[in-house]
Image (cartoon, rainbow, N blue to C red):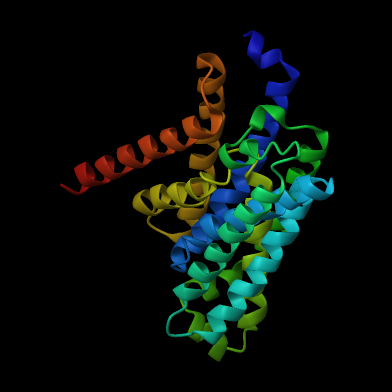
Length: 267
């Protein structure tokens, strides 16, 4: 079809295929650690960075990435401060991110700030720089996960046992937060900051419903992410629909089928 031969659509497919590996994979770790909302938090902080990037005329994704990484360190610091109420860290940083973003939006009213593409996604506008950033993030995330897969498994399912066994829990918590920040910053131009948490959490929900082991969950979460992103892009391209919204609605459809299938099999 004509759209498949279009250069902008080919870039969209490449970028989508790469982020469909890393976002659901990191999302699985977050969901299992009861930190599913961290995606929304870092996405809002990233948007504040994007707005600042437009204001100072610096590559917006790079500034958003810096903001997200700093926010990930802040979340980990607050988690350690409020151990009993760890979810407070997410609420505090999210509030700060929204407040800073709104302030920067107000300051940028007189400038050409195309922030809407980062809020709702604009995968068809990906350029070579965006693809290079996404590819770099994918390599970093997959490398760290493969190198530390045993440690991450233990940390995910029993943080106290990991600490008692001598694992540097603080280091790995920060590493997971930073990797998540990298993925979210690379994802916001694909599905948008308002929808990026769906790409993190819904594939994880599907895989946990269908899988019987952690290894199966890891494989399924990537497969589901790839199917949703690539099929969503194709449907959006053919029907002239919003890519980010199409991908998320397709993910919800896959989740509904997964839940129904599991219930039928258990009946």
